[in-house]
Length: 432
Ligand code: GDP
Image 1 (cartoon, protein in one colour):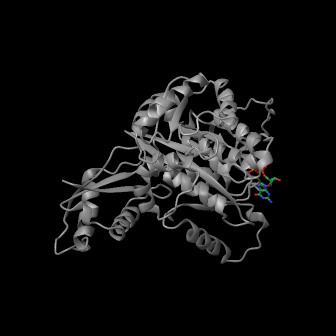
Image 2 (image 1 turned 30 degrees about the vertical axis):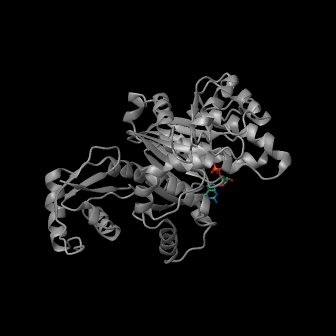
Image 3 (image 1 turned 90 degrees about the vertical axis):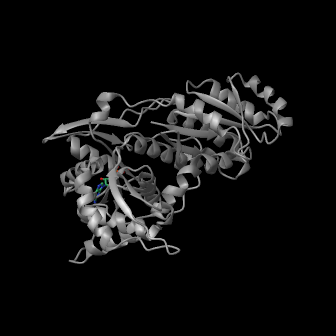
């Protein structure tokens, strides 16, 4: 998994770098989903590598007495969960005690650390960066996250540390069970594998990876990634959310399909929406389970009302299966898994070019993109791009004139004619 965590004391400029690393994707993604990004984690891209970036600073509590301890603990969590760490310092202030503290924690880690000296906004400051070699953490990268200078050089080095997924693991569908605490994730995993797993409590300072279970029963074979398997106590209670977000992000990164469990009694909440959007932004397949359905008083309208409420919150990507489950009564749990596997298929589906053009071109001819400034836009040819999730290129004379509403029309038509249920779709207009 490719997770970059930006660590460092407050005010060194972590969030400016975070914005810069995630902005290349922002235009495309926000365009499609119409959502605002979470301020603390997002998706970035450099050359053809995708990654998740976490700005640890966003989670630090304000109160003075917890803050240094909280930062130190966050760095430890980040070391465990991220693949690469950016340790940001400020060239205008030099090394502070807290910087030294963080450096000490980082020196003991075995993860790649990139010391970046921020606010090197002019060449006069270049000579100042040598002091940061004193951390003993290797190369120091000068950065001006305000102007963006240095970002490319830093990313060139960082992506060399990303690992490729082993071939064997790549061949099986990977399904992550995600959701807030107590929605029933562990219960679902236990019900599926038919036994109570023995959860060994980790010794202080050591954690296990998100738990992967090779499932091979009833004719289905896949990897189950369990985010609930381990609950570590954080010393600083303010870090609990940070910790759970880190784990969720990591498990999402590895997944093909995310099974997002929500609690029927509580409905879909903002934390659920965050997970949903993160999965969507990462182009993962999604299935929503409304669990504890046994606790809901129902009539013939209840399911429909629930579905509508969920659709309202996850707009515009609503082509997502919703399954009503009771893990307690083992109601529809296999249906949930079968649906997740269907979503996996939809996400890896390749539509032959001839079929794509035969179906889509007549629809486009009937409802062409509206002319702009008197110019007619003509879409001539469509092809599915070879990628891990559905991606289509529409070749036309004036791609820059095609607006979002038309893009949505195209997406809807693709979804109506080919089943992409649960899978995000990317559409690009290109000049022939
Ligand atoms: P996790 O934190 O998401 O792993 O949630 P758990 O699997 O630990 O479940 C939290 C609590 O909800 C436990 O007491 C479960 O027995 C209960 N629970 C899980 N699924 C259901 C369900 O479908 N119906 C009811 N009534 N309770 C459930």
